[in-house]
Image (cartoon, rainbow, N blue to C red):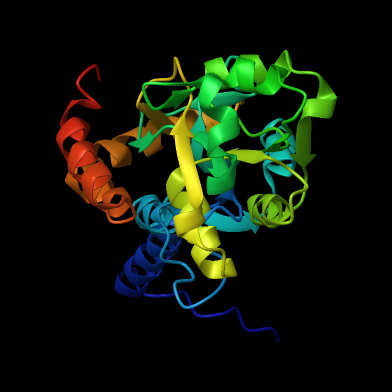
Length: 294
């Protein structure tokens, strides 16, 4: 004779039901969507190697963002700028913690509210070239179009990096032979070495980035000169960019809530520590007005 299993008591049934509900609630709360974050060699924003590894501006900001977005799983993918753009153009949810806005990028990215103001890009030359570029210097800034029209000079740039609308437009109008476009991971460091060996006359970049690489690679910083580009604003605003998909838009909405709490003194202080004295003082004063419009 077969024996049927004993029926659980009402109290036991209640306990089982509560356990199942608890399990279901845990599963529902577990993050099930992945954000792949593109990060790249761009010290002191992202520091990939050495004693300060992981302590860059974007490194710290990204860590704070991820802590405050527990509804997502997070994966950091180390890529160059061109590869990052390819990933952001796909349907999978990909975000970048530090990008400049451009019309081209708006075709495949949703942008957050601004996260940080950064000192604008400029042209870096060796001291011995100063006399030759004097015709292109005006009030401490360089006429980039005039400089690039001079056949004596060749400028190092990074593939698919945006330097701001005015500089980008100038580069697009420049004959290819005037530019040395680098595609590698440690691209700016390689350009800096090419400059030291006389293969290029100058390079474009952020001064804190160039100075960090020079100090790391044993290049004499005192022999370098940085000139902002004529017509460019003193500061550029940085953003988080995510894939232009419904999932990317939803992620940006969540990211914006976190940015509103983080930006201000916390992120501004992260950036200011990498600036030299007078530039730091001016930045801390000017940074108070970065986010007035939103």
